[in-house]
Image (cartoon, rainbow, N blue to C red; front, side, top):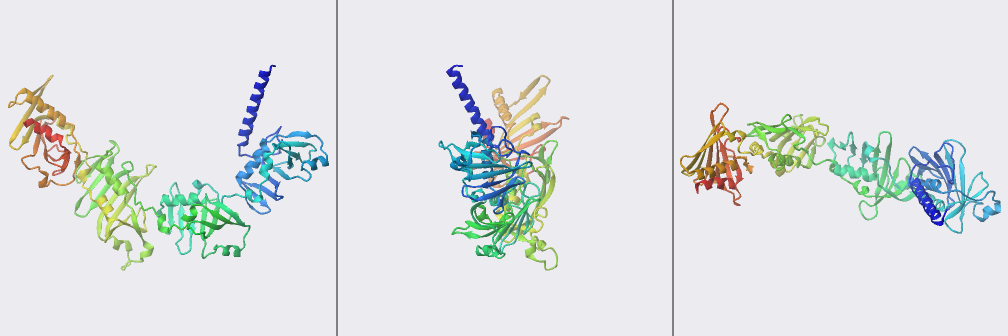
Length: 611
């Protein structure tokens, strides 16, 4: 074998060895590997407990409890998972390199093994424990001297194992104050002096407020509190197994402590916090919990959230609705006709069925979408709870008196993420400056106090504004006669269709002008209203003046009967970009007297016929 081949083999072996150390050391399980490592075999295959003698001459005993490691001596506390993992990885990844097969006492004393500098004793599910003694580093500093109890040989092993055991016992304690999976947490209780108790429950994916009143919880408040509690860190370990006087000295008493209980169902942990330590609100606090029982000084953002007022845990949003979730809308207001909109599942469109019929526009910029956004924007500025009102003078429901001056009722059928449709009724009443909003489905024991301007946006809608904006329904493509009027001037065009031919006839004008007329009408066939105004015509709309242009169409039905459609275009807006219009006739897609705006080019297209 030549020199080049030898060098290449050495490089390959070195790379494979490094990869084995790297990826073998990243596993978190504590199953010990076999031949060639410092610890070759452990009967049962998994470490269940171990003892350590640290470089600080502190002894400690550790025990696995489920998925966690606990220190069981000289005190009981949850162990740092990182510290235990580093020890197990060092044991798994370091080699056993024999120096002397039968070292005598003087040799062991010389290398710091009699007595040992540090020691680890491992116990498994079966069999005898394995003891590892560690001494001084060798001259290179990369290795340390080691001995396996019951084995007379002297070994070298990686010095990083000594580094792990150089930590003080307090560094082996878990620096997380509370632990658990936030996604599996089912209930949170918060008790504070002078405040009503707050109870949150999560039956599904969303937090619900149970106390002080049944309500949907504000996820922007509940979520950060729950996750933040599980991120609290121990700044200092203050006292093991503190006495009552130790807690009282730090403000942890029934009169002053903030108490939080986290409930996972099979596991329940209660933590008690003293007042903020330091000048800033939300600073460090002394705390004790029911699992570990020790006194800690803890820190974390969630400490400031413990002072959140109970009312802030309520979701101020009354309801969230979109065209994708709403199935039916019914709006009832005093002095106005009730309008009803339903979703046609077969045709996948919304239809208005009362006070008139028509297809509803649900496009991205439609009035329906903006109106549903206005409904979804309703937020409570305050709350009136049944328990705070007391009984009504007549002994009835106290809410009935508050809701006497009715402004309207909005009834919705709303689908959830699973497709289940539930009815929701929103009742609005005059509350003086603001508006009272009641929903027995959303908050049976609470009335929302809502800003009046927001309610006006949700109630002040004309059903005509919801309609599809197409001005020329499909039947108009079969028109037989078109008439355009501008003041006392009139243009007409007749269209006669015969098999294989179409004849355009305008006896009063030459053929070139007839073609221009035909082109103008063809351009209008796909026209849409810019916006339906949802009101009756006004004098300032200019629909009755000499400048108004009227387009009248006679349309042949399947039986040959002629039906009419007319659109009238009036005054322009201040920008000159749109003009007011109104439609009439048997084929009009809009209710009578409905006005709208269209782009100004439509009027100019027709006016050009008279130039």
